[in-house]
Image 1 (cartoon, rainbow, N blue to C red):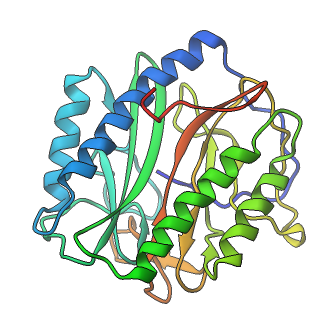
Image 2 (cartoon, rainbow, N blue to C red; image 1 turned 60 degrees about the vertical axis):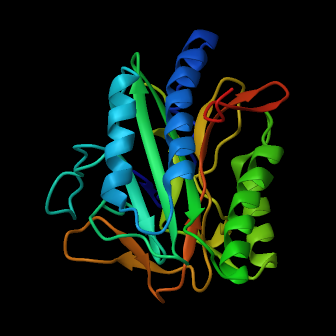
Length: 272
């Protein structure tokens, strides 16, 4: 479940720094998320349905002793609570795609977002997968989005303002001819899926966005969302869950949960 665009104010209060023990508990939750996404990599292919992928994920999470964080979540726009462990967003669908029985086709891409709570702490990660053979330009979209997350991770260190990192993400993506989504952002994470701060992937001083200083033992979910065309998005159906690009061009989404350390970023959802 993605956070909406932040409001207008400076923010540092409300951020919960984590102990070493808490970070290790979050790493354990993150390993389950990593394993689910690794399983998705093996099973995403033409002909499989996103409902089948979700069944695999739900079984694995249950066997691991975890809880699927997204299942049962409500939002004011939706007609029903979110019914699945995975958000599965296909092609022009950006986030919050509901798993269904429509087979994936050769040339599709599917963004898969997974959140797990284990022993009271959360992990959250996402990847976008190619289904069979995709076009070179769509592959470049995936490559750039994944690299934009790497740009963010490389830029993280205590004492930096998040706005500096957000500018680097945006600058890289736009230099490649793509656009960064404004309406949805990353978030703090810990005992709850969504904690302070909100973590945007772009920066616009005119909007007077909330900014924060990166601190050691801060844990955040960083998740660039990148569109092939315009940055504009909208709800894609009357159910009030799936968000799509307004121009219906493809989009991609990659995410890691990470802890800020003295030396940089410690990924908690990379399986290590």
